[in-house]
Length: 300
Image 1 (spheres, rainbow, N blue to C red):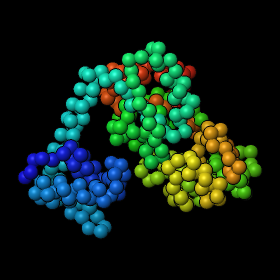
Image 2 (spheres, helix red, strand yellow):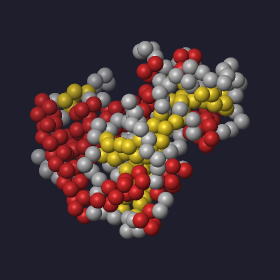
Image 3 (cartoon, rainbow, N blue to C red):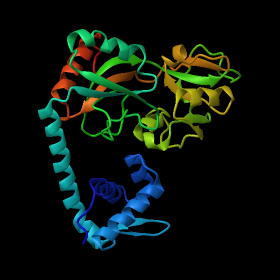
Image 4 (cartoon, one colour):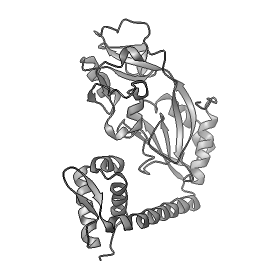
């Protein structure tokens, strides 16, 4: 066996061994399916044995793969813990902040106000993320803090709710319901809908109101990863979408209408991070950011 196995190959094996589906594993890793397939073949060559049995319909672990997977998971946990520990010990003065498109304008600037005076030694790097990654980089370890809208697919997430909004329907200007003052979600469930990419996971399900559909699939007509793409599709009459009330202020355009949905729960914006992974600088930055906004209650 060739012991020169990279950490990324182990992560690819663990993801595919968990999902047993190339598409879902690739989305989880934010890589393409061909890239994942090539990486698994490379790993199998280095191991000297097959790790998966696959055909056009299914993927299954071989006996070697099943036996090896717990060791790989254990090793990855140890590596992640070691990286987290050194980041904390080094007190890294750079903090990476991700924000979901539509959340990083006024609110992020407000939360960072006064940073140069209070924490001048901390350097921040901000990155905008579209709907393909509603965790704003947290899931992939690309950011330390994130401004996002839950729910998202991160198990060890800690968060504080910093803003709240209501649901609205984004409709084509000529839609039969565009002139209404308000709507219920039930009135819209049969409408063709524009949704986030599949990689958005439960965030995508949440914003197509999957919980209100009683198991009936949504009539998905298009996917959009940005508000610009979403509102362009809706202005063309392709479908409708569900979104937050701030969109009516940020993306108003002649071809669309925004109508409040009166029977949906509040949508929260949260400052979030992975549990146990904050450096000293990041913890100080969290305290600073939260001190700049009014307290918002936790969702029930």
